[in-house]
Image (tube, rainbow, N blue to C red; front, top):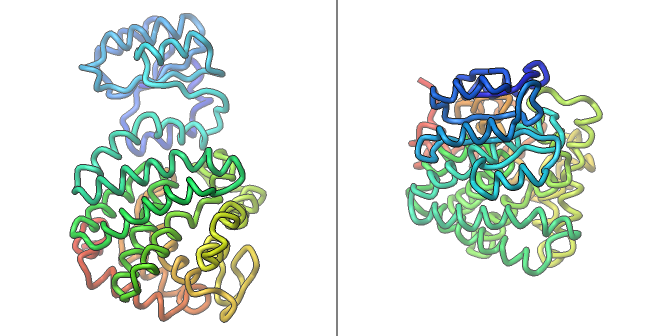
Length: 367
C-alpha cells in the first residue's frame, strides 16, 4: 500500500514495483488508516500529508501490523527528530529520505524491504552458503566506508580475503547451484551480481584446474570487479529506465574508479587490478575504458569479462527479468571473437552446461 497525495510524482517507482507487488495507492490522509485493515505486507507513507499527519498515520499502521511481519516505510524530505524517533522505537522500519529520483528511491526501498529476508533465505541453503552470505554482506556493508577513505586498505583486504575464501569453499559444494539460483533474483543488484561473479569465477577456476592461490585470486577478482560502481551516483546506478548519453558516459567510468580503489592495496596482484579496470574491454578494441585489443588484454580480464556478461544477462534487475541460460548463450555466441575470448567462453559454457550448475532451474534452459 502506497499512501501519497501525489501519485503522479511516484509513477516510475510504482510502475516498477508493480512488477513484484499488487499495489493499492491511497490518499495519505487520516482515512487511509481504514485501509490498513486489509493487512498489506508493506505500507509506504509519504510524510508530507495534505490533510493529516504522517507521524500519526504511521503509528496507526504500526498498531495493525500482523505480528511485526509487515514492513512499514516512511518517505520524508529529510531525517527529522520525529522520524528518527519512529525508527528508534520500532514504529517504522526505516525512512526513505532525500532525493525522490526513481533509481535512488527503489534502491533504498529494496534495502529496507527485501535485503534482510533475501539474505536469510540464501543463508538457509547450506552452511557454505551461510558463510558466503555472512562474509559477503560484511564485506559489502563496510566497503562503502572503506572506499570513501580512498581505497582498499589492509583491513579491507582482509575482509575481501575472508569473503573470497568462503566463496571458494562454496564453489566446491553441491549447494553452489541453488545459491546462484536465488542470488540472481536478489534485489540488492550490485551486491548480488558481484557475489555471483565471484562464485562463478571460483567455479570456473575449479573446473579448469587452477592452483589454490589462483583460485582465491579469481574469487577476489570477481568480488571486486564492479567496485567502482560505488563511485557512480545511485540515480544512474539504480535507474529503472534507459540511461542518457551523459549517464552512460558516467557509468562507463566505473572500471577506472574501481582500479583507482584497488591500486594501492593490491600492488602485488597486478592481474586483479587489470581485471577491475579492463573487464569491459573487447578483443576488437571497441570496449572501454582504454580500447585495448587482442593481445593487450590480460587473461584474468578476459575471464572476468566472460563471467560478467553471463551474470549480467541472467541477473534480474528492476528494469528486466532474468534471461534463460540458452538465450544468454545465444547472445554470447555472437560476442565470441569480436568481444569475448572464444577459448575461454567455450570452456565457461561447457562448465555451465555440463556440470551441476545446469541442474538448477535458474540456469536450466527454457522448455
